[in-house]
Length: 105
Image (cartoon, rainbow, N blue to C red):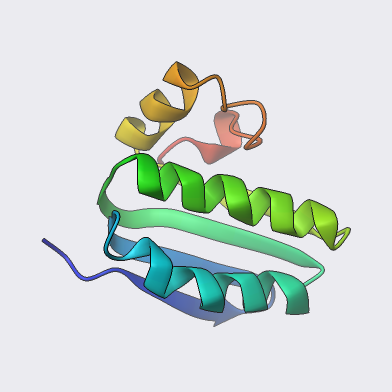
């Protein structure tokens, strides 16, 4: 298992890495929520997420909702295929704004 981490990359960019699961998501959320509140436009890369379950999907859904509540823009990029599949299976792909730009590079 890879420890999950939120990294601020400057200029409205951040990334999540590691495993997004029931043990890591509660630790990640406060920092991500704060970052969303500070940045009017945030690009969040998931390129270094090694695995995720429904807790990771819930984290992303909450992040998108938090951005909307603050009238901020959040875009998800480099979303791993497994997480894309879970989002589509849950009918959340559109809600999360997952499109070609969110696909892994």
